[in-house]
Image (cartoon, rainbow, N blue to C red; front, side):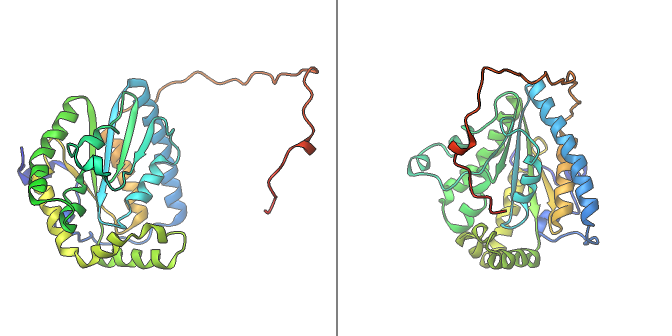
Length: 286
């Protein structure tokens, strides 16, 4: 189970084995903004239908987003959740484990966030931290790392057998595009928070991250739980392609709902509204 035959990749809709060296496919011309917004709107309407189907059928879905820093994971997640009900579709983005969590079974703190029936959970980074940043930056021991590679396929197989729909996306970005986005974050005050010390160090560990990703794929890119690679050098196309693929991976139908008719507004003379002068309004700066 640890190493699947790469010939099985022919069954997948992956783009030119971009996961091998993080090299993007041939760049297409920029997508016009109006075309992008039009297609995004269509896909978001379908996401709402998928959400209602998940709730109606009591499905349990987990979607994992991994990839290099500044690869576009966060932007795609934002567009997915933008029009969805946070009580049905929620995002999990865990920080550094606490001292107590460090003593637990590695997967334990992630298990606490798995979906119940009628929920979809999106992991903005996941248990694969151990095979990426923890491996490269030395935040775990060699034994812990090797145990993760052995255990992860079995852990995911258990999730799938329990009825969870598991999808894993790897956002692939080139070195030039990543550096361009890092520079943009440095110069943009509303994006500067996105650039952590670890993000900056990742540039000097580029080859090590590539090697760690390749080894991770060798163990965890299984036929039962495959990795789906997103060519992410073009943010807009990456978002649309990823959402389109996500919709294709969970069969759904539109849930018919009864027509909504608003009742007449209640009218009564018994209620007297308090004077506005007794309320404190915020300044109307705009």
